[in-house]
Image 1 (spheres, rainbow, N blue to C red):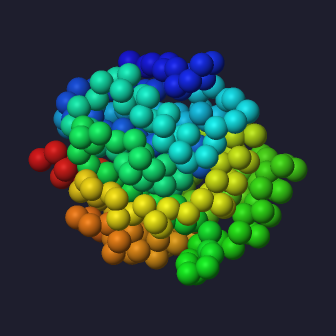
Image 2 (spheres, one colour):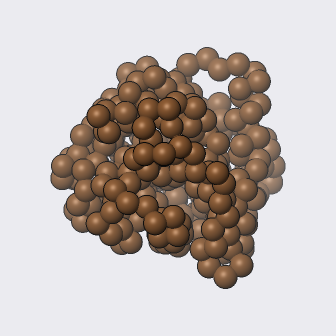
Length: 267
């Protein structure tokens, strides 16, 4: 079943809703959409999960307004979707940029129905290096990435995708994955890149009060592996699972292991 849920006047999000059982809400990475989780969508509904994939505003099949690409607005959008679907006892899984957005939801908007937070190759607590945090890209590097997307988005997107996976992927797979990024609007891609560059969630980690599963690929060339080590250290009641033969895209590089870790949560 598919939904279009209005999160504010004139802005509707596309939500894919498949299966019955324990709800698990997936928040995609930059600049993709819910279809990046195809290899979870294929399996998890067969094993007792209700797969709910949200296309964030500006991405996939959702509306693409001019504004609203800061973490708090994006997290509030999730809140509206969760309440509209009346989700109970649900899990929230955020991949890459979806990680800090999910953290923002968990610390500012969640109610008691959020049972488990899952952070997958999360771009958190800060995607860029800054005073007291020497991990991640330099802010100037993100400026260069933004400039590349402003001038030739398809080429910049193809260059960005080269660093996504550790294992070899076929040419048709690469083309499919590339087109997921092209489904985003140019302005949403750029504005969320600015949020990745500027926002810092180090100060909110202590307020995460649900069990948290953290997963990260050891060969991640986009989100520093140290991000998840820090998250594990700072988030109480967290579990850290390392993926030894994965890059950033561990949901595909080691999809069997990824799905097994998710299925453990409902056994």
